[in-house]
Image 1 (cartoon, one colour):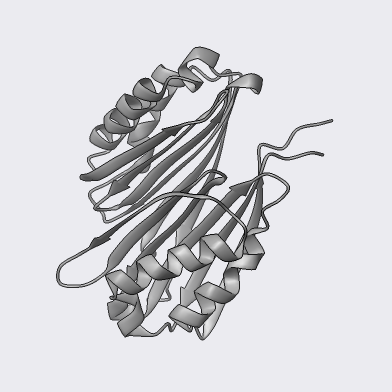
Image 2 (cartoon, one colour; image 1 turned 180 degrees about the vertical axis):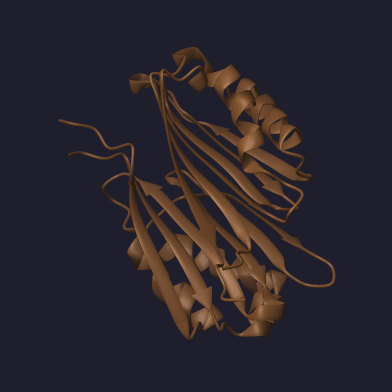
Length: 117
Length: 117
């Protein structure tokens, strides 16, 4: 079975709460994650919520990386969706771990666009 | 079990190939999908690939909607991720169906940020 995309659904708990609320830091992490998995960045958009929380999306030539944070409970929901043989989304994980420092990190690995060859 | 977010992972096959390659149309569909599920739009970014394919992300106050298209095989991968009780991601589906006209539409429904109450 061939597939078009690899999609990692990541649940990050007990993260560094300051990092979760740091808009510039989230933007830098998205850039680092993009570079470390060999993807090509089209643009990054982040948004800081009041009183807390950050949303960020990196639009890639190979799909996207997204993050939504809840600093008040130490949680972040992240997705890495990549297509193409030259990009491995797992390679982005160290940049994410380094920045958010999750004590608990659950990943669901989904294949997108699965086709019978 | 309480959860923070609702995430619909959508696999759309045998779509209208012209719609899949229509950047302005994808942007309008993302806007319609956002409005129809009662979400608040922060921004939309779309990108047209050469020779074909469109990527689009709607950044929402309640998370995001994304689309990546492969017009050459009639396929689109979409995600709707929303948080908050007032937004129901299923309500965005008619706007998506109307635009892409998929003959086959598979949905995986994932709860994000599940917590024991």
